[in-house]
Length: 231
Image (cartoon, rainbow, N blue to C red; front, side, top):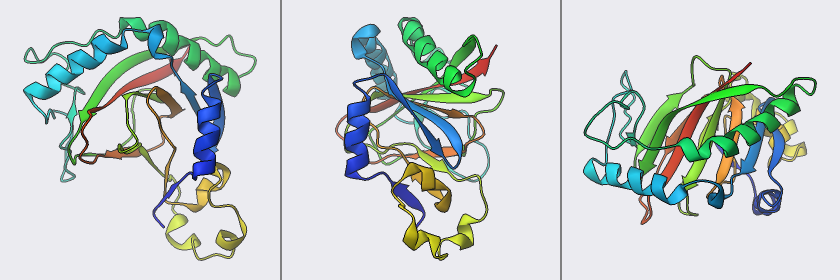
């Protein structure tokens, strides 16, 4: 098994969780915060409209990827100064982002003052069968993904195990004893996906490699990514 998704029971828990503001998990032993940002707290419609217009101009926007692994998604990374596309105004997101980032830091460092800085580095948009190659976010300590527009038919981000033992450990008897649907046992898997809905936010250590594999959909899948630093 290369990929393990959470079950419908976990999805129900996630939906209940979003009535609060966040919940804390450990995926591959790494601290993950999953929460939800209320759409009425920022200019969601304006952000979606700007990104949609950019996408319609050029469904594949790619200046970032190197090597033989193809990336054929529309995204803004390393292309923010391209005059062909409109710049997205993210300023209305600031209060919501700072609030949920401070909660993440407080969970990690209870004695800290919760001081945190972030920089939005990318948006992705797709409604075709596209792929963004596995990568880590460099020059930061933590990363965040905000699913601004997302339907059930869309694919969540896939996180890749940082361990080598998953190549041979799967046949161990533990796989028949432990609850393989439980995030705490994600270390048994090569890959993991969290159930995702529109407005979901996932915060994770930047060392955790991840990728996006999209499918054909009627509605544009839009996500925003940010790099996070403490202090």
